[in-house]
Image (cartoon, rainbow, N blue to C red; front, side, top):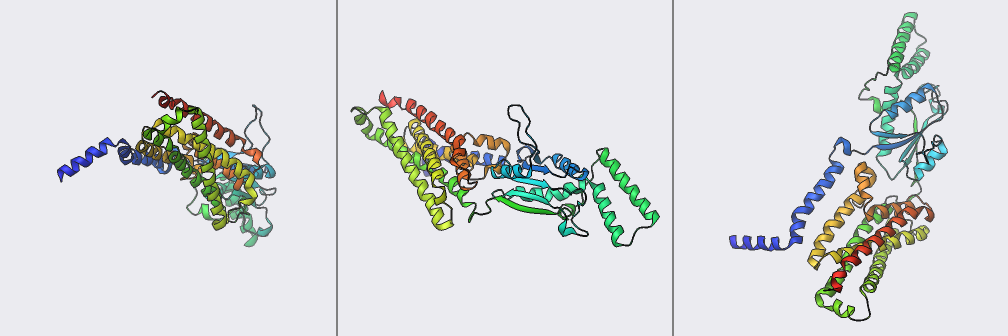
Length: 427
């Protein structure tokens, strides 16, 4: 038994690829998912919300300030400055357009007349102006967070307004307060106003967030007409990940030609190394594109993916994504010496890229640092492009950032692969 164990250990140590997969890969994946789900304060992503104040009353202004004081939110009142010039505040129309464009998952519209009757009960409650919550239904968490925080912020940011409104209803329904009762209520309201003006905060009760004291109407502005809204995201996310595996495996044919001596015979003819690698890049790109076609056709046939109306955008994103992953596969094949090394290295690198690039877990739920790290992967840019086409129904002209980055990936990766492959020319 000891001899068998020792032989197996020696064999494992000689196979560096298997050794790396056995120990390095689990540690790397544990670290990545620990950062995403570990619950550290600095790794929790903030929820972006656009707030439009159409009322500009004391109550609405306090509500906006209450949202701005929440540490878990990034409140946007106006778009980002352009060339150092501040942009006008969001309106209901521009806020809806921003949610559709993916600049924020939620927008709150505080309507005219909110400050006169902020509480959602009492007489004529059905006709009272209600806050509109515009949501991107691809983010299932942000709308729930904002809806819950709205009730809490209403109590903590304008308690005097709530108390005054409640006192008015109580006085109306109970036939009126005595002079002594009215004086006590007025004194309590003055105390609340003084505390608000001094910046003091109040702790909300455990039931305040669920009380529903603020009337809210939610409306999905993105994905409301989709038959199966998340299929396009998963088709792109999983498709890109497996494209990377396919491209690296197909590029491994170069290593087979080196080991069999075929490459030497090819290079002894009129075919140059650059021509050979460009031919393999073209073939691998076509193979990857066909794989994407099959993936999305399956999504259309089985999961009701709206495919045919997005053919032009799919062709653009599919072609450039396939080109980028094909160049990535050639780079891995050029770096490795054997098929065994290629299998180990490709598994390690592709799974890491897929985990931080959004193929395994949506990037908008990651921390800001992890989202920025994902921008160094092919996965993130490809998924963003397919999301624009299939989810947001944006025109092809809006794909230029993703297309440019994917072209840049393809050029840089192919150039490095060609440089590394020089060793076969002089071997």
